Image 1 (cartoon, one colour):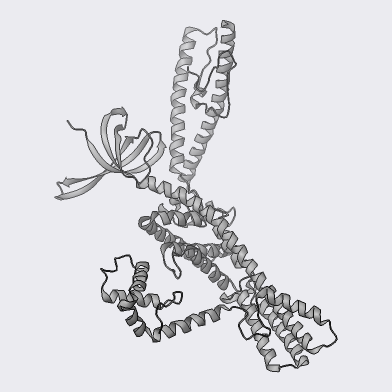
Image 2 (image 1 turned 180 degrees about the vertical axis):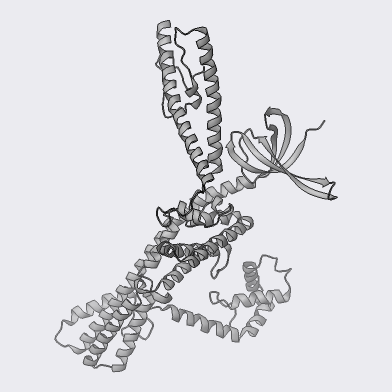
Length: 244
Length: 317
């Protein structure tokens, strides 16, 4: 006679040596309510290699009784979800400790950045002062002043002082730059898209599509391609491939 | 009787490491039969030994059962693991002077102030006296701003929103992600930590306790969903937040028992046991003491057996 076979879920592990508890769910017909109901039964199952983890789905097979409550053994692990979880847990801990060092580095970098900005502003103030005294006072050491001014200019790569170009980069001005770029492209979006969809710009179009879409570009519909291109063009990080 | 954990290497003495050998408490039942014992005495001693053995096995197993039943959480189910680096980092970030109040950055503010000063100076032109006064005024403005908007001087709400922002940025899947389960869990964790500080200070504020309780439940729900959806991300999130799997998956309610066990308000009895419960606890304590005694006695008997074995061996040689 074939051996008894069940498929069940490992619900408890590690409490007994070489033994796991497996929950088996079966459907039985209930005569009183005249329908099938679910029945659960927990078996203690022999696990020779102590392989199973909580959450695994396993097939168990009847064996000659080896102790008071043990007459099944693990035949195979069908879904090793529990083992996978244990692996994830281990990997996650390693990843978190690695991330910790990185984050501390970033934290210190931010401090340094602030310090460098403050010194830069101090230097610029000094530059202003030097420049003023160079113009007004006639009796100071002019060579010394010139030397000082030159060193500061060189340090921050400033061509002329007072300069018309922005010396400090403000976050808000960067954003406004992006905004003007988007507005400009948005105004000319029809012409850009028309040009991009023409045969002349096929290589550029193919490149953008391979970047942004997983599907093959030949399978995509015309309007889908247009949408993808529009999204690409309206992103200020990307360079517009068309002149307009 | 067999000697568990003993080994003989040739003629060398008995190798024994007291720490590595776990002596079975069954040794406590051992009865040493004196040489001049009568037959009936020997018989009664043997019976006593058997009876004691059965008793010891029963007691040890009962204690094991009780300890399994009274299984505790691996970490604090509300605050997570103490000295968790992520939480520490968040608190450090809140105190960091690179940040300004109300979401401003000091770096940007310094640049703007410099720009404003330059603009004002340009208005005056080359007049050096006026320029000096403007510089002094701008410096005063700068000092005032640095004091008023210092992160140390801002309110608790602002600090919390800064902490939440950092938590969100650490957990987001991509830029602008505000609602993925791990982000939600991180934000709830930050909120729980900030609210628990208040709970610790004011024990009578029942409303905020209830609020924390709800947030802990919410975090559990979100994390349970994440476990089902993406287990790899789930384990990463809980490792980072200082939680464990059992804290998320098992039933938990932030009740008075929790507040007592984790000493939220110090050593304070919040849950009074009934007479029946008291009796049960005493019983378990007694059982524990008894098992301890068995272990001590077992060790003594084990040494005695060894001593006798050694002398026997010497005399036979």
